[in-house]
Length: 560
Image 1 (cartoon, rainbow, N blue to C red):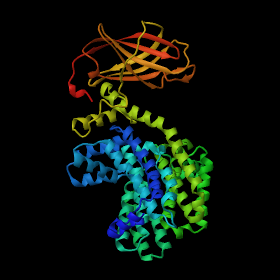
Image 2 (cartoon, rainbow, N blue to C red):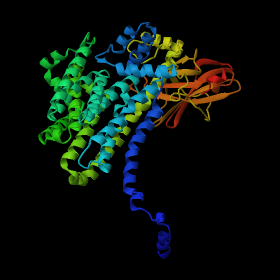
Image 3 (tube, rainbow, N blue to C red):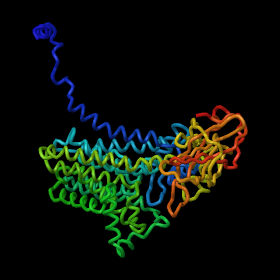
Image 4 (cartoon, rainbow, N blue to C red):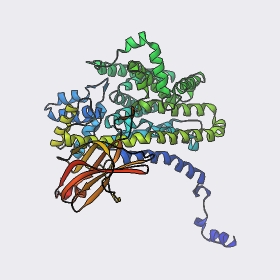
């Protein structure tokens, strides 16, 4: 101790400033907050594939092909703001065009990433907008609620990621800027509102809710300007607007079946949990309590963001209740109800006060961490399946001319083919999500019976794609493994397969379906017969399929 004092006296800089010491509590909170964020992005990078899905064909490939075919600027500008279903998605098209101008091509993974980067931005703005000591560990439950995969159908679809997430980001940013004084912040709020309106249709809800925020703040001149600009944006939005074919008539549903709208609305709000009707009703109740407690004065940003989200949910209910309540559980819309949960948590904690919030924090951490973990457990199978099926779709299409995920396969194939020829899009024809790996296996002699139906596609592909179903006549119980075997006079190659849903057995769809995609560079030159080897419980079967494969030397560039 004496030496330390002497050293400190000789060198004052050696004295440790208490404020410079590492705060272990804050460090733990930061790490705990980064865990759900890191897990969220890890899942994205593991399972994102460069394959268009549904609306991606129209909104990305179809748009870009049309845009490049136009010669004059007015036609191009009109295309940018043209209607897509019930929305005008100009910002999605700008993002597509920006990527094309920067790289000369479209990579759907890059567009998806650009879309999901809105999620941490939303979380950051929620944190910045929170008040009343709502910092540090108290914000962790909101992160556990937000950063989980329940809305993965939007995460892994470029058009949905860019529109569904960014409209919410621009909405929250607009409220955030509106809450601040000054011409610059007001201008930024207007810009965000306009961009939100041309990102997705619910963006126009910003104008009535923003006007209410300004009136509440007694900023009447700003409110008049806001309403005037909003009226102009909405008028332009609906100029030449037409109801999408096949969509139910909204007014008819509201008037003739209001109960269907209410059921859809409650289910939509509560969709992130299994007791969805109760959760939806509880969400409404908590929101009404916030209104009663005057939360709109305490934190207008979070409050009017909640109003925007509830209006979005209500509009979706009115527009889609005619499709049935089951569609309220669609994962591509789930981000709205998830953010309602997170925002209600913030509002509830701020209303409770700092001391009571600290006492309740352990319970909230346990509940929201469990929610996060169970969301992954519930969704990961679907995420893996979607990555696999999307990867398979483009390989099947390249090999057989069909298989793309779009309502009109021929149109999708035509767009994809034209985009590939023009160098706009380059699909991965050896996607890791469906590649079969060579394995070591001790094979029996020909034995047992196997019923099967198998298709082989190899033309224009860097691999042999086997798809179909196979069922062994075994009495084995337990795990089932299916291997695809290539046999020549001198070599026997064994490859694993991926399970898929097969035809009904005893009236129940079973996992007799399979796919095996064998890279051609893994198969030495020669003539091979194709066999199936099935192990089920303690039994096995090993039979030829009748298919033949002629392996030739290939260009090494096919190798991944």
